[in-house]
Length: 349
Length: 247
Image 1 (cartoon, each protein chain N blue to C red):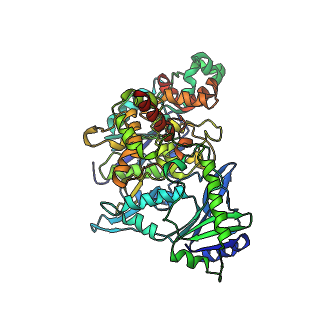
Image 2 (image 1 turned 135 degrees about the vertical axis):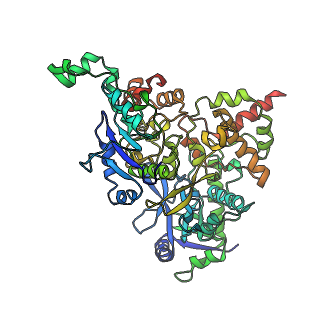
Image 3 (image 1 turned 90 degrees about the vertical axis):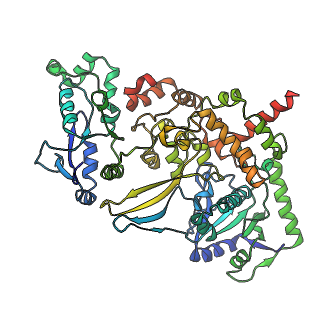
């Protein structure tokens, strides 16, 4: 493992250098207690100790609305539109990196998503070890407390003025040395980083699943036909889609078209969609595969707990807790629901 | 429909703000009129003709004499489009439906109230068949342009059925409930791009109740977030008045 030590004053110079080459986004406090990734411009104060960035980072690879084809109705011609600005996300927490890694795999399977991949290829990710844990988060029990890949650099704050920076790719290392040589980390600094990780891990473990996450697919599958369970919990579902739209691993979209005002040219675009919305599974003739809120509610837990696992061997939930916050009805908490299922099955015997 | 359909605008009880939004399309309107023929639109031209294919109707039905007029428009038009909250859902005119008749008449017309015939406000669809709705208070000019283009391409524009929360999430807004504010986005039909929330306000519900809104759940959510029944009612009646049986 190659690692360097970077001191806080150095970061400003590095950021300045990086910002000349690509769009740099950093976590910052946008409102009391709410953090977002915003473009770095020298004035933005970086929230090194943020607990959770409010909006999912998938928007950097899968924007809420994205043009994918432009067409000409007079000439009957069409051409693909692929936009992929060069960007750097600086300060991504490991659970969010895990979510991006998962999206990378899903977008490559079956029909590779070229728009996603182009954006992803032009994106550098610098991870950051969290120091605070959002009260709704439970990532430590979803196997998302640390990641082995998916970052170009991984930063851990080891003292108020220093970072232990682990190299994840040649490009990352290059970026670190863009302003001249940097100091190699000592064994003691490495140990400090390890301790920093253990410290936040202990904090994160206060909110966790009551069982090993690997049992989730089997457990949730056993409950598939337990209509009473799903109906009861979904009674106050607003079918607003907030839980899936804020989810960093949800990637569903709808495809639409719009003509220009002269009705000569047009564009086909995709925009976020979600299985919790009633129209999502509606097809020609008005038939709907998941007509009722409880069926959609169940589907989401199946998707996160089993269907993604069947494809990739990991859960579709990384435990960031965004959905827990986003659901105004307070019924979207995967940790609570999976724990309940586990408990119910455990007590059956 | 003819190659260049004739389009007319009409208004009932309303502020004509929706037609103003259409006028606000400015140069875009010039592109659109290469495909349509505007025969009646008093905000932009004095000349008017009564031969039209598409009628855009703004405002709510609030008087007995509105009924024969809207029926005639319906008969003349091949396609009737309701534009703006007053026409699509009754809008804020319906606030008067919660006050008794003598009281609202006296408040508005004073000593002359006997001279005016007025009754409970209703959306256009309460009297005649409406082919298409363009929601909002006021309407979004881009959505209007889009709806017109879809008509010209032989389609009926259908606004989203999901609630505003979807567009708020796309815009990356912080949920108003998390800020301790009452917001109707959880039950209001989307399509506005969450414009009010984007500008720092809350959703007021001007696009009407989303077709599958869970009003019982919304009540519980407001309750659990600490809002009183009265606060919620004030907020809900502003635009949802005509759907009060759902409240």
